[in-house]
Image (cartoon, rainbow, N blue to C red; front, side):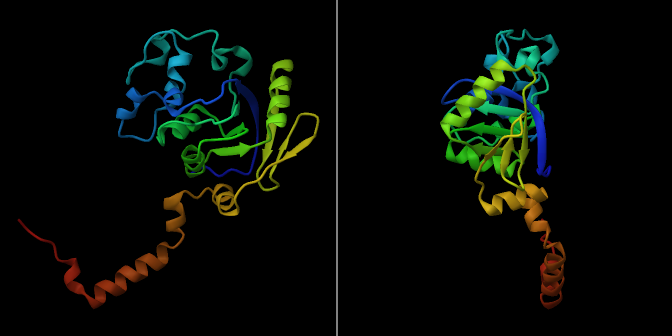
Length: 216
């Protein structure tokens, strides 16, 4: 998992409340058994004018020119600004995967659905809860200034605005530790790889029959 320490990026505003996971990555794209390739279908039903199906070449599709991510001023955005209850609906891990694979590194909102919030951390995506007043002001500033960028400083737990003003945010210490070090659940376990190998070798020495395989 990609570590998160300090990130500066263009902000894209998603000015809708209660954006659910089916809007983030529609159900037909969940057929894949891979964990990659979801970025082109992020917000698919809003992003394109034609219906999307797995395996389609995005270049052959009809982009919706009115959708925020298709507007030139938000190209390359890596910070998503959202409204309350972002990520509600079904608990699909594919939603943060799609956001991450599109290129987003952080999401700022007044509130998130609980399961989506947890899944973000497991995917290396940083969800930041800020007061509604702060979010509303950021929406105004993003609209007023093309190319508006924010810096997310996770070690210091602040969002830094272009004028240098800082907005503090909270993050659970263990989740912060995992993100700063790039540890997903597997990475956390592999920190103890030597102990695991030692345990397996000792167990096999004491119970060598465990190495036998059933035939037939």
